[in-house]
Length: 281
Image (tube, rainbow, N blue to C red; front, side, top):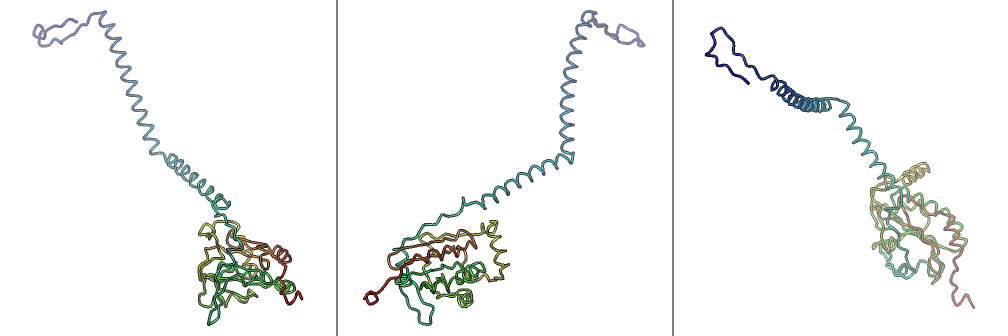
């Protein structure tokens, strides 16, 4: 490049730079290439910034995000509801043995209660025994009424009908008596609800079977209250006389899972009453 000092020109003359022809062409090319690359890079950054800014300001971007979160939450809720309605999380009942039931201490509900071993209830003639989850529960009252409908046939067979409760609160047992036609005893240690006590907590209220039981009992005209403990599940037993054993053991799976009355009656027909020595003579 040739440079001309401004002092060698007149005041009105302009400073002129004349790059060599070849240099001008090559430099022009290189400079042009550099400027083009820089311009393209800048364009990319500007474009990305514009896209990001546009996405951040676009309402549909937030809408799509909210829909994604909502769909995920809905899917998780649907899965939880499905699992709650299976038996996966239900505690498995442990079957009772005759020896276990025989040694349970029960109390009468008289003013002066008497404590006795449970085997007295079925030793001679066998027995049908209901372990009541909660006397004030309208589902338990429904089951008690169905079992009581069997009493005329049980009386013909000479088989008594009993119930045990976990606690005695206010007039709960007395209020339960109109639905149950047999004698009721107190199982303070809750042994009839074992050997392994099973509970159903608030998961019961999302089970479709429980809601179906609710509507069935309500439509049947049963009502109740919220007094007492009602999470420990109950059941129904048909016990043969003496050492005949347990002929039927129904363990409540969920709230309102009542025993089949026909199964109770069929098991009761298998009971063989004990005959005393005098009767044998």
